[in-house]
Image (cartoon, rainbow, N blue to C red):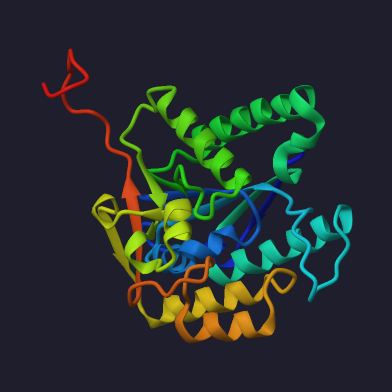
Length: 264
């Protein structure tokens, strides 16, 4: 699998202590990073070494307002959009460049080899980056999108599959269920607030940088959507987030062994 790597110029200048802490965010599509863009910028600004990895090339993400043909043409546009967003956020970028849906339409023989290849690529990336924290999609995929769920599940499987030789925290992005009024939508992608045990705040500089990074994804968002995001930087799923915070669910390993499925 051909891997495209872009390093944002802001990190090349270096910040004192930048190598001490490392954050790796792994998502499915170019623009998925917008869900946590403010805190990506926050941590990069604070000197954390932040890497964003995008699994697919976004070739199937046709939007009528942009009218860019699906396939190689749209993939090329979205790759450039993602480079732009990474530069705005001041983060490193790794692009695995798999096809959207990982060739699911080709059935088992077409799909599974790509899934296995992606699993190996993610494992190699984690090994190379040596992050202290990882952010990805949770079981809901943020919108129940098959690519989101597959990438999040793959990251989780890799994370659980070995001893990484150091403490590594895994976090799932989550949309608080309390912010979703529609019951059907809440079932599809809401996470009960009590499970979102990590709340990360960010400031106005981070909010504006995130908004500008979202502007890079012109093929995916209309001008009206951009304007709404600039005003409030909601998450990319369209819900107003709590003021200047991102909610996450930490994967917590069991602390004790049990011999029963019920109680102790």
